[in-house]
Amino acid sequence: MKTKAAAPAYSHPVAVATLHGENHLRLVPDEAARKAIARALGLHAVDRLEARLAISHAQSGLVSVEGELEADVQPICVVSLDPFPQEVREPVNLKLAPPELVERMVKRAEEDENEDFEPPDTIENGVIDFGALAVEFLALALDPYPRKPGAEFKGGDPLEPKPSPFEALKALKINKE
Image (tube, rainbow, N blue to C red; front, side):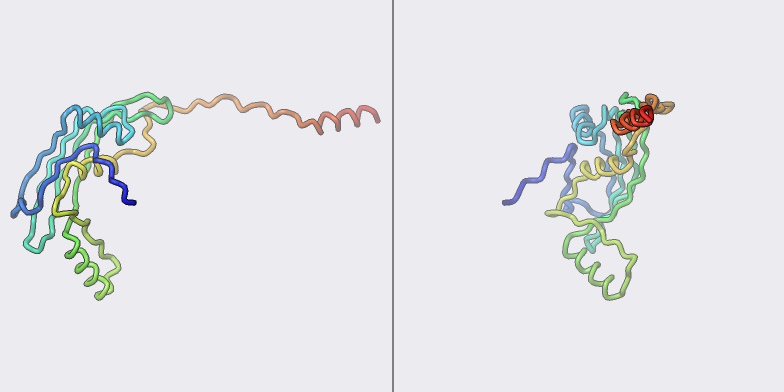
């Protein structure tokens, strides 16, 4: 049984066939999309998100995506559990290719014994979802354990260890002698 993948929090699909040469794309999700992104990433809020991308599509089918992602988010502090404002700036640099080109590139790298080769991501069904890519880059830029500036963990005093019942019996035995 095949399960259907969950819809991305933000989506901006573009057919690769419509990309020719170099293209520029600016993504600015609306309030509803930012709320969905915040829920998906476990944030209190995403106040602003903007991705500016330069997309190059080569005749070989290889697609290069370069640009920058900027966001104002409110993660939840792991110490105080309070949301706090945080700015995110993340460079975007990604290569994508159709499955058949990825296979040829991987095969050539194996033949050349190129262990450092990192294949491009695969383009699914001739479409690139730049919205989902922006959310992915934002997720990778976030601190998994965000801490509000100045927040300190103030644990309680260590508990006094409870005496074991055997210690109490031992004390009675000593007193009898």
